[in-house]
Length: 609
Image (cartoon, rainbow, N blue to C red; front, side, top):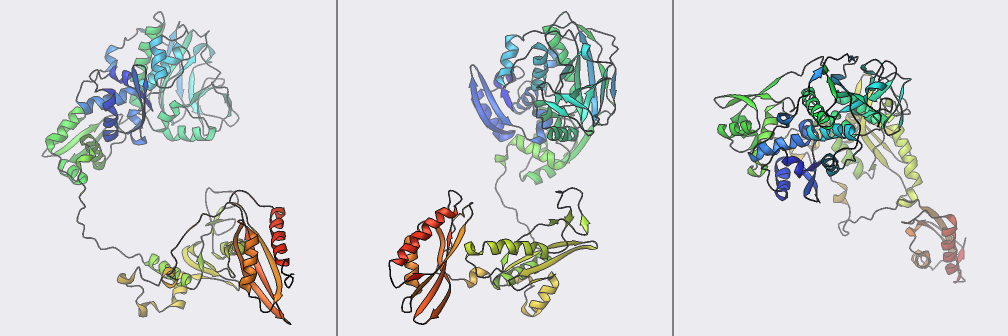
């Protein structure tokens, strides 16, 4: 979110210099992602995390926070607002969904849509917003100022009042940016008696759009369920600044402040307008919340001593109402602070204000004896047993197209949980056999240890496969058939991590392990057989082939067969070709194979079969 330094100074006149603010943000509030100078202003791009989006996605919210931290005066903008006189209204507002928590509406007559004054244009441009007209700009300015999204409808284009409801499956809307959107019954909308006017909390529609001919408007200041807004945004693929604020949950108590600021700005821009009474539909008021904690508990959580007086000072600076007795505090949580619910939350709050650099890096002494997970211990033993028998571990899909346990939501062809490991292992065998030339493996041996899901519960199974067969059984059965566990002490706590020797222990220690990234492109395998005199070794043939193979050979030549006849011997060798830059064609490989053949033919006693 972009924050203007000059804008902040409107509320915190004695704000520290702009070049000092990044450290304050970083160490006590949020991450600074960028700082930009714009003329005489400085723009901070700060990353407000979701836990503070309720109150900090606005200039007023950040200004209040900075004033409290810096122990300086915060000027409440509400003190400067001119409250317009209002007349009785006939505006009708109906809430027909529990996803709308509050809806405030107000009719204003006799406005004049015109370009915004320079100060407003510059202020919006400072945070990356384009000026449209005075009414739309006022709504945007209020949102970036106090954090409450606003919308305005052309009153003369609204038929029969405002209705907040779920959409019907057959309904559609064309948004202000000319995007045609088909609605679903799960989408919340703002409508009149005839049509949909806006997607609630996300985007207005063209139906009641304000234009240069608009004279009378309805102001909307509302509060919507964050989950509903987030799901609708994702479903319709519409992302707006309003959506960002609503999906992170705003307090319904913010709405009156926004309506007051909105009305004052419109009165300033259009002094001859007629304001009607505000209609405020608030089905269930936000409850007041309390939180208790002790200074001792805060100190224990943070790992440093925080005195009662220090906590009192912090609470006063941040305008918390509180009571304290014998080091135990009871606070009234501000309406905008949804992030405070437990003692741990208050410890985090006090810790960030004090500065986490105050917490010393001392490791606590904990008398802890680790608990041994019996299932994992058995899995580890079985895994090491199979690895040492030359098997490689694979992991296959848990979801499949048939089974005994169906899941609520999944891909259309994978609606069930697997009842065995064998089916997945079969598919893995096929894929590995296809790639065996590239892997340089004469035999594929794989295994899997995993959970299967039966009607009567879950079971841990072991399955292993080679060219002969696939075997599957319960983990306990595999262990009982392969080892006398109690005799060898494999399940003792002391030997937990030495259940069986690892493959690295039995492999050669002469070569250091190395890794080269594999190519994302497919390989091509070719075989070549050469008749040579009996006295010629396979190494001589391999050397000739290597000299003509080139850099595209990633494996081989490898001898996989030989036989003797009369005074000659036949060597069958395999080469694997692969490029790191593209997919090879048969023609390209044929050229290389022809080159190899020609090199072999230079020896008249050798013959390519």
